[in-house]
Image 1: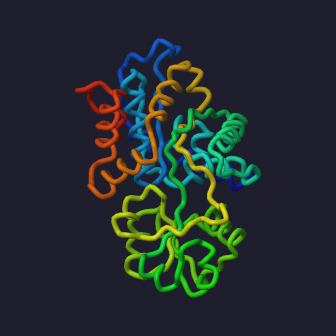
Image 2: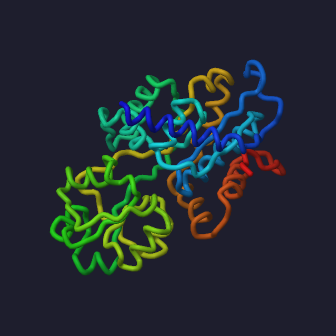
Image 3: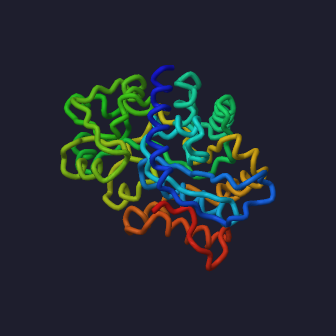
Length: 321
């Protein structure tokens, strides 16, 4: 696996530089379960708003319990973040069960639509790499194949299968890593036989992809199912009628060393958060960030306070200057 090792080395260099600028949050006195001086729990996120939001939610819940935490938001794609987690440069990442399983198993273990089975397989695969998973949240956020209402009406598109007859005329846009991801272009070719006229690498369900779709620069886009813009702009999500997309429950992935250092209370804190996080709740929080323009950290703190996971009047934790 030379490519994965190279990515991990790259992650080491990038994150070592980033960590030099970090400040810690949380109480100086870590929970009694910790052994020795407090070891900062660095929470990393992928490079899209929901992942940043989840990172602040995890860090805020932990900081409220006295764990020393900091956040490194918007680090990049899974190809950077997950190897950094395995290398110990970060200790905690908000993940998605199906995509994480495909990545960590190098495509050898296939995720399914079953949330329970996919989460179980992920926990097993992560354990082999010195990582543990918390309880998956009921909330899911997966890939959505999206067109405008005008495109759907013009070509009579309701399902992804319907794209087969028009894909050679359409440009597909999505994350730059899409050509290598099992649930993006490779899966669309294998499961649906889709061959688009062109692929344009844009961003991970972000403003570039949405703008290109609205402007007609692309005809089909990969967005995320919790994206509030889908409803706001009356976009059409094509039904995944052949079941390409797996269960994608939000789940915290943590280094075993950190879990062992702080004891069961650490995972219990994360699990308490997950138990309260539904897909509808996650989508509403995303809307506050992506449509309302609010800072992810502020949205996270308000929700944690409303759920009783952070005491009223508490200060912000886990910020990076």
